[in-house]
Image (cartoon, rainbow, N blue to C red; front, top):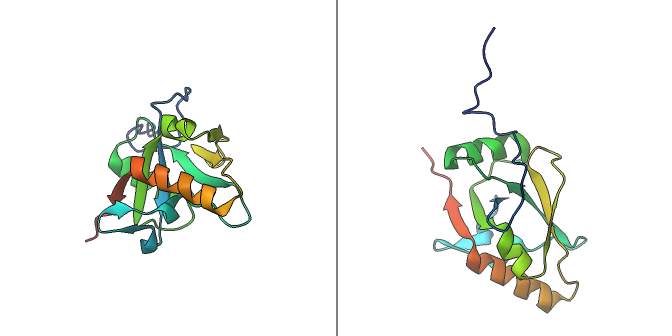
Length: 136
């Protein structure tokens, strides 16, 4: 019987969610970043929504974050935006953890006014770290 390898298990969800908890938003559209910087589009909710999908990645290495995204996001991400729960809260956004799929959460509720929504997305982008996937 093979023992469970915790080094590759990315589904184990941390039990606490505080301001220092790390989140990531997986990205596939290169229009979401340019010249090594995130753009506001990376944090814009779909037109019919006031939330964005993110994953809680506390305790995961960079490689494990990529593996988790590959397993649960539904597309192969070209990049990701790493940021903290506290950044969301600083801009009056809630982080609503649902763990469906594992480690999943929604961030919202974004303003419905287009200019206000873009302003919040720009602020999130300015506080997040772009991590591009290495190829090859």
